[in-house]
Length: 389
Ligand SMILES: Cc1cc2nc3c(=O)[nH]c(=O)nc-3n(C[C@H](O)[C@H](O)[C@H](O)COP(=O)(O)OP(=O)(O)OC[C@H]3O[C@@H](n4cnc5c(N)ncnc54)[C@H](O)[C@@H]3O)c2cc1C
Image 1: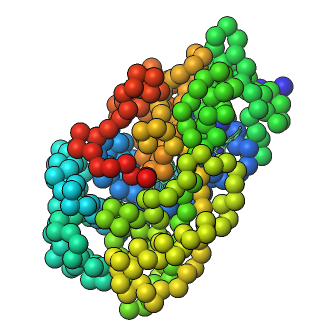
Image 2 (image 1 turned 135 degrees about the horizontal axis):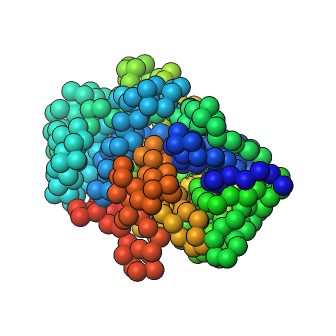
Image 3 (image 1 turned 180 degrees about the vertical axis):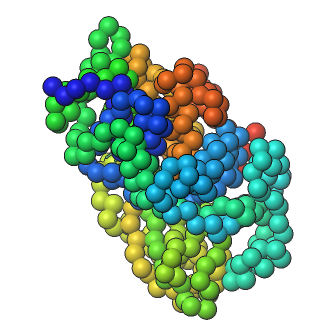
């Protein structure tokens, strides 16, 4: 039998690593159990967009609190998260212009650097973009993208320097409860005792919930992305963009690459362990067509690579955060395809919840599991359509 821990975290994605970092900083004896390797799940496939534009205030607040980490990574965490500032543009269909205005006002109220710009401003920021299908866009000059693998490794490295343990190639097979509270986990490497168990198992979160008889409404969400090589006349970089008009997002990558993902046809309910080495048939053609709509010069781009990833998605496409089921059991899952950028603050909040009984950094009470049984799905005051369709 292994020695006991204060907190056992299941899953070494960005959320397991962030929570381990925050707990270890407070001298908690914490172990992260990972059935494969660090960032083997959604995190290792993430597009890494770092922006604060959401239509739900608590998410914008989490993203803004997390942004302080991304831009001050060396001081706040150590190592390198690969944050690259590109500026971020949110384009919406004409039907959502009122919502765009209202959401930018909400972001400004929080303190997020976000402004409305017109199509001519966008042309100045990104001369290669077609700008004839919108009049106004939201612009976050400070935002960009980070390296999800590097970010996770940096969190875990500092966590370990502060006493955290990680066991890779270690699958959790069961959770033991005694008198209504968790007492440890059964793993492929034996039993580990602990007073608190956190489900940070991404697309596999529902199966971890079942281990304590808890229905966790997290389904699988499959998402493909591709990297293309920009023709040299497209310049060395461009802003990061969510282009809702063309149901896609894209961002630059070093080496004259551009990453493209699509908002539609992301299959829900497939196996979390399917083939992610290859994008689905037809994805590259669809994504190529979309990027050429926004950047016509991409007609001369070439394909670098395409692959898939799987995250956990909830019915309202928002995370589940908080205590649920037996005493000592916590959920940090269901990040629904947008969980990378909020991980630094989510880890801080979950650590506060576990240790102090409530989160102080950001109010995360909106993300409780109970909202589903109460039929209170999370929806922004000025909601856009669902991100994923
Ligand atoms: C292709 C793609 C692009 C994305 N792009 C963005 C983006 O641009 N910006 C953004 O903010 N978000 C993005 N996301 C979403 C974001 O990446 C995820 O929300 C986030 O990485 C989820 O992290 P996690 O730690 O919850 O889960 P994961 O990274 O999936 O980690 C869960 C871990 O749990 C492990 N595990 C599962 N079961 C067990 C078990 N029984 N025992 C032990 N370990 C177990 C798994 O092996 C896995 O490593 C994207 C997601 C995908 C798939």
